[in-house]
Length: 253
Image (cartoon, rainbow, N blue to C red; front, side, top):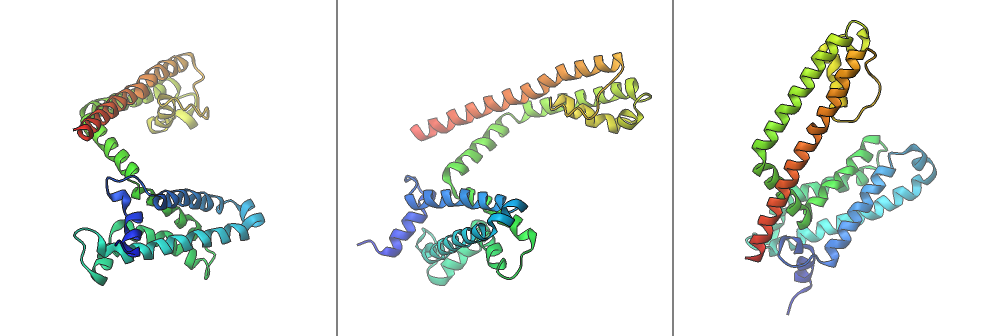
Protein backbone atom coordinates (compact mmCIF):
# COMPACT_ATOMS: atom_id res chain seq x y z
CA UNK A 1 0.00 0.00 0.00
CA UNK A 2 1.34 3.41 -0.96
CA UNK A 3 2.14 5.64 2.00
CA UNK A 4 1.21 9.31 2.45
CA UNK A 5 4.87 10.23 2.05
CA UNK A 6 5.02 8.45 -1.30
CA UNK A 7 1.84 10.21 -2.43
CA UNK A 8 3.42 13.56 -1.60
CA UNK A 9 6.57 12.54 -3.46
CA UNK A 10 4.68 11.60 -6.63
CA UNK A 11 2.57 14.75 -6.54
CA UNK A 12 5.59 17.06 -6.17
CA UNK A 13 8.13 15.22 -8.29
CA UNK A 14 6.00 14.51 -11.34
CA UNK A 15 7.77 17.16 -13.40
CA UNK A 16 10.88 14.99 -13.33
CA UNK A 17 9.10 12.03 -14.86
CA UNK A 18 7.23 11.23 -18.05
CA UNK A 19 3.88 11.47 -16.30
CA UNK A 20 1.46 14.31 -16.76
CA UNK A 21 1.89 17.34 -14.56
CA UNK A 22 0.01 16.82 -11.30
CA UNK A 23 -2.57 19.18 -9.85
CA UNK A 24 -0.15 20.08 -7.05
CA UNK A 25 2.55 21.16 -9.48
CA UNK A 26 0.02 23.10 -11.59
CA UNK A 27 -1.26 24.85 -8.46
CA UNK A 28 2.27 25.78 -7.44
CA UNK A 29 2.86 27.13 -10.94
CA UNK A 30 -0.21 29.36 -10.69
CA UNK A 31 0.95 30.49 -7.25
CA UNK A 32 4.39 31.38 -8.62
CA UNK A 33 2.81 33.61 -11.27
CA UNK A 34 0.57 35.19 -8.63
CA UNK A 35 3.51 35.81 -6.28
CA UNK A 36 5.53 37.45 -9.06
CA UNK A 37 2.58 39.74 -9.74
CA UNK A 38 2.49 40.65 -6.05
CA UNK A 39 6.23 41.38 -6.03
CA UNK A 40 5.83 43.66 -9.05
CA UNK A 41 2.86 45.50 -7.51
CA UNK A 42 4.75 45.94 -4.24
CA UNK A 43 7.25 48.21 -6.01
CA UNK A 44 4.49 50.71 -6.88
CA UNK A 45 4.23 53.45 -4.19
CA UNK A 46 0.50 54.03 -4.86
CA UNK A 47 -0.28 50.36 -4.25
CA UNK A 48 1.89 50.25 -1.13
CA UNK A 49 0.17 53.30 0.33
CA UNK A 50 -3.41 52.20 -0.41
CA UNK A 51 -3.25 48.38 -0.33
CA UNK A 52 0.03 47.77 1.48
CA UNK A 53 -1.50 45.68 4.28
CA UNK A 54 -3.40 43.45 1.85
CA UNK A 55 -0.34 42.92 -0.33
CA UNK A 56 1.75 42.09 2.76
CA UNK A 57 -0.81 39.55 4.02
CA UNK A 58 -1.08 37.90 0.61
CA UNK A 59 2.71 37.75 0.38
CA UNK A 60 2.92 36.08 3.79
CA UNK A 61 0.27 33.55 2.75
CA UNK A 62 2.11 32.75 -0.49
CA UNK A 63 5.46 32.50 1.28
CA UNK A 64 3.93 30.16 3.88
CA UNK A 65 2.71 27.82 1.13
CA UNK A 66 6.12 27.93 -0.55
CA UNK A 67 7.79 27.18 2.77
CA UNK A 68 5.46 24.21 3.34
CA UNK A 69 6.28 22.97 -0.16
CA UNK A 70 10.01 23.40 0.55
CA UNK A 71 9.74 21.33 3.75
CA UNK A 72 7.68 18.70 1.91
CA UNK A 73 10.34 18.40 -0.78
CA UNK A 74 13.01 17.98 1.89
CA UNK A 75 10.88 15.29 3.53
CA UNK A 76 10.39 13.25 0.35
CA UNK A 77 13.84 13.89 -1.19
CA UNK A 78 15.29 10.55 0.09
CA UNK A 79 12.59 8.69 -1.91
CA UNK A 80 14.02 9.83 -5.21
CA UNK A 81 15.84 7.23 -7.31
CA UNK A 82 19.53 7.17 -6.45
CA UNK A 83 19.11 9.44 -3.42
CA UNK A 84 20.70 8.73 -0.07
CA UNK A 85 18.43 7.83 2.82
CA UNK A 86 17.46 9.93 5.80
CA UNK A 87 18.90 13.34 6.52
CA UNK A 88 21.71 12.83 4.02
CA UNK A 89 19.19 12.59 1.19
CA UNK A 90 17.41 15.71 2.43
CA UNK A 91 20.74 17.55 2.64
CA UNK A 92 21.68 16.49 -0.90
CA UNK A 93 18.44 18.05 -2.11
CA UNK A 94 18.86 21.20 0.03
CA UNK A 95 22.14 22.11 -1.70
CA UNK A 96 20.78 21.75 -5.24
CA UNK A 97 20.36 25.01 -7.21
CA UNK A 98 16.56 24.70 -7.37
CA UNK A 99 16.27 24.11 -3.61
CA UNK A 100 18.51 27.10 -2.87
CA UNK A 101 16.39 29.18 -5.24
CA UNK A 102 13.26 28.05 -3.39
CA UNK A 103 14.78 29.16 -0.09
CA UNK A 104 15.88 32.53 -1.48
CA UNK A 105 12.32 33.11 -2.70
CA UNK A 106 11.01 32.66 0.86
CA UNK A 107 13.67 34.55 2.84
CA UNK A 108 12.62 38.12 1.83
CA UNK A 109 9.17 37.64 3.35
CA UNK A 110 10.69 36.35 6.61
CA UNK A 111 13.16 39.25 6.73
CA UNK A 112 10.29 41.61 6.00
CA UNK A 113 9.07 41.10 9.56
CA UNK A 114 12.26 42.76 10.81
CA UNK A 115 13.02 45.23 8.02
CA UNK A 116 11.18 47.15 5.33
CA UNK A 117 14.14 47.72 3.03
CA UNK A 118 13.11 48.22 -0.58
CA UNK A 119 15.64 45.70 -1.90
CA UNK A 120 13.70 42.91 -0.16
CA UNK A 121 10.78 43.59 -2.48
CA UNK A 122 13.09 43.23 -5.46
CA UNK A 123 14.57 39.96 -4.16
CA UNK A 124 11.07 38.48 -4.18
CA UNK A 125 11.26 38.57 -7.98
CA UNK A 126 13.73 35.68 -7.75
CA UNK A 127 10.59 33.55 -7.57
CA UNK A 128 10.53 33.90 -11.33
CA UNK A 129 13.41 31.41 -11.35
CA UNK A 130 11.09 28.78 -9.89
CA UNK A 131 9.53 28.49 -13.33
CA UNK A 132 12.63 26.40 -14.06
CA UNK A 133 10.95 23.51 -12.24
CA UNK A 134 8.45 23.12 -15.06
CA UNK A 135 9.30 20.32 -17.48
CA UNK A 136 7.65 22.35 -20.25
CA UNK A 137 9.93 25.29 -19.48
CA UNK A 138 13.01 23.04 -19.47
CA UNK A 139 11.91 21.54 -22.78
CA UNK A 140 11.51 25.04 -24.23
CA UNK A 141 15.00 26.03 -23.08
CA UNK A 142 16.40 22.84 -24.59
CA UNK A 143 14.74 23.59 -27.93
CA UNK A 144 16.00 27.17 -27.73
CA UNK A 145 19.57 26.01 -27.16
CA UNK A 146 19.33 23.40 -29.93
CA UNK A 147 17.98 26.00 -32.36
CA UNK A 148 20.82 28.40 -31.63
CA UNK A 149 23.46 25.68 -31.75
CA UNK A 150 22.23 24.40 -35.12
CA UNK A 151 22.19 27.89 -36.66
CA UNK A 152 25.23 29.28 -34.85
CA UNK A 153 27.27 29.94 -37.99
CA UNK A 154 24.40 31.66 -39.79
CA UNK A 155 23.69 33.82 -36.74
CA UNK A 156 27.36 34.81 -36.53
CA UNK A 157 27.26 35.95 -40.17
CA UNK A 158 24.07 37.90 -39.42
CA UNK A 159 25.72 39.54 -36.39
CA UNK A 160 28.72 40.57 -38.50
CA UNK A 161 26.39 42.08 -41.10
CA UNK A 162 24.55 44.02 -38.37
CA UNK A 163 27.82 45.31 -36.92
CA UNK A 164 29.07 46.44 -40.33
CA UNK A 165 25.81 48.30 -41.05
CA UNK A 166 25.89 50.04 -37.66
CA UNK A 167 29.54 51.10 -37.92
CA UNK A 168 29.35 52.30 -41.53
CA UNK A 169 26.15 54.27 -40.94
CA UNK A 170 27.72 55.84 -37.82
CA UNK A 171 30.79 56.95 -39.79
CA UNK A 172 28.71 58.36 -42.64
CA UNK A 173 26.37 60.18 -40.27
CA UNK A 174 29.35 61.67 -38.43
CA UNK A 175 30.71 63.01 -41.72
CA UNK A 176 27.30 64.39 -42.75
CA UNK A 177 26.04 65.83 -39.45
CA UNK A 178 29.05 66.06 -37.15
CA UNK A 179 29.88 69.67 -37.92
CA UNK A 180 26.23 70.80 -37.74
CA UNK A 181 24.90 68.87 -34.70
CA UNK A 182 27.96 68.53 -32.49
CA UNK A 183 25.92 67.56 -29.43
CA UNK A 184 24.23 64.58 -31.10
CA UNK A 185 26.59 63.65 -33.95
CA UNK A 186 29.87 65.28 -32.90
CA UNK A 187 31.73 61.96 -32.71
CA UNK A 188 31.38 58.43 -34.06
CA UNK A 189 30.54 57.00 -30.60
CA UNK A 190 27.67 59.50 -30.35
CA UNK A 191 26.49 58.46 -33.81
CA UNK A 192 26.52 54.82 -32.71
CA UNK A 193 23.51 55.46 -30.46
CA UNK A 194 21.53 56.90 -33.35
CA UNK A 195 22.63 54.07 -35.63
CA UNK A 196 21.63 51.29 -33.22
CA UNK A 197 18.22 52.90 -32.61
CA UNK A 198 17.65 53.31 -36.35
CA UNK A 199 18.93 49.89 -37.45
CA UNK A 200 16.79 48.10 -34.85
CA UNK A 201 13.79 50.15 -36.12
CA UNK A 202 13.12 51.52 -32.61
CA UNK A 203 13.39 55.16 -33.65
CA UNK A 204 13.14 57.10 -30.37
CA UNK A 205 13.37 60.39 -32.24
CA UNK A 206 15.70 62.00 -29.71
CA UNK A 207 18.35 62.52 -32.41
CA UNK A 208 17.76 62.88 -36.14
CA UNK A 209 19.55 64.36 -39.19
CA UNK A 210 18.66 67.77 -40.57
CA UNK A 211 20.74 67.87 -43.78
CA UNK A 212 19.69 66.32 -47.08
CA UNK A 213 22.66 63.94 -47.17
CA UNK A 214 22.04 63.02 -43.54
CA UNK A 215 18.42 62.18 -44.28
CA UNK A 216 19.50 60.05 -47.24
CA UNK A 217 21.94 58.14 -45.02
CA UNK A 218 19.19 57.69 -42.44
CA UNK A 219 16.78 56.32 -45.07
CA UNK A 220 19.35 53.81 -46.36
CA UNK A 221 20.22 52.80 -42.78
CA UNK A 222 16.55 52.21 -42.00
CA UNK A 223 16.16 50.03 -45.11
CA UNK A 224 19.23 48.00 -44.12
CA UNK A 225 17.77 47.76 -40.62
CA UNK A 226 14.83 45.76 -41.96
CA UNK A 227 17.27 43.07 -43.07
CA UNK A 228 19.15 43.29 -39.76
CA UNK A 229 15.91 42.34 -37.94
CA UNK A 230 14.41 39.96 -40.52
CA UNK A 231 17.47 37.79 -41.22
CA UNK A 232 18.13 36.56 -37.63
CA UNK A 233 14.39 36.10 -37.02
CA UNK A 234 14.18 33.85 -40.08
CA UNK A 235 17.30 31.93 -39.04
CA UNK A 236 16.04 31.38 -35.49
CA UNK A 237 12.56 30.38 -36.74
CA UNK A 238 14.12 27.79 -39.05
CA UNK A 239 16.26 26.54 -36.18
CA UNK A 240 13.22 26.16 -33.92
CA UNK A 241 11.33 24.31 -36.63
CA UNK A 242 14.23 21.89 -37.13
CA UNK A 243 14.74 21.39 -33.38
CA UNK A 244 11.02 20.81 -32.77
CA UNK A 245 10.84 18.34 -35.65
CA UNK A 246 13.86 16.46 -34.31
CA UNK A 247 12.37 16.36 -30.79
CA UNK A 248 9.03 15.12 -32.11
CA UNK A 249 10.76 12.37 -34.10
CA UNK A 250 12.59 11.20 -30.97
CA UNK A 251 9.37 11.09 -28.95
CA UNK A 252 7.57 9.12 -31.69
CA UNK A 253 10.39 6.60 -31.91
